[in-house]
Length: 388
Image (tube, rainbow, N blue to C red; front, side):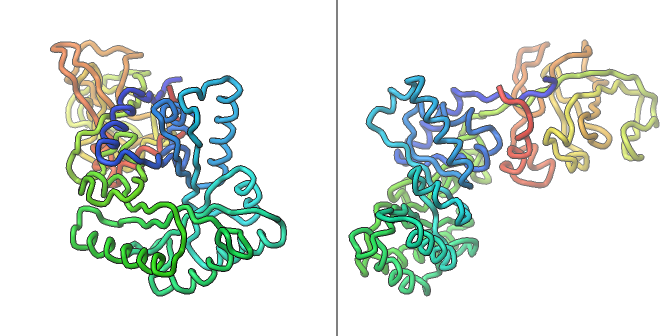
């Protein structure tokens, strides 16, 4: 393949260690195919490092995890997790038709509105006997995306009481009550959300609702406030993959490198046009390299609007020029010596300068700034690239 994404397992382990130094109990978020890196690539690394609780977005991702675990069991690769149960929670909505799989494969679901809960309970009553559905209750503390409002909690408790473990109907086991912070760097708003979450927990506790865990932290809250909001778990996604969760760096390690290569070199004259349209007019006689990567691989087209965007060739900056094509980009090699066709090009990651041995680096945060987006968006766009 001309375009590759390399996963640095050792740096992922280092990020895990750094996360666990704040909260040793983590739910590893591998939703949306492990942020595009492939559950099959990331899950084994996490298992080897004694992770046993995972959060996904959809039921098919839970299916994938269970299949990988079955293969590991056949190959006797799970010795390091002996006597540890693997838990999977689904963060997003699952269609009622998939409830059977969740029940039969011990997948925990997130409940966030009455309609969803009603549909699930109806199916449980009509189609299952002596079956308990494991659920996480999401409450809305201020993000206003998913979750029950504080004003709805008593009504929710009334329903839960009819179906919780040891009740007459015995259909629901509440694993956790959790929420999500929308802006961890805004201390005032964060404290408001925490207060609301605590108030909601008090309502559950006052009404003797049985649940096992509480969790509020995602990567930003974890690194902004340390152990302050630890509760029982931290749900950690972006920090695992080396994405800095705050506006300043907290010292995470880069997990991915995206590489391609030069497939053509052209000498063009001052005022010549390159690529589509008329944006790419060179202002001097130039040596232009054609690199085999484009928006079809996830390099967002908006990067062409940045005056700062570059790639690394021979450990030096090669400015991206002209419009981004579907599977090619143009880079300015005029000031870089000894470049040849097939030379390596780094789009995200580090490369050593061939002349002085120093390292240059392009981070996901830099690419996100050039594009005008966030790191998660940049990373998940690379999902179609072959992983190594």
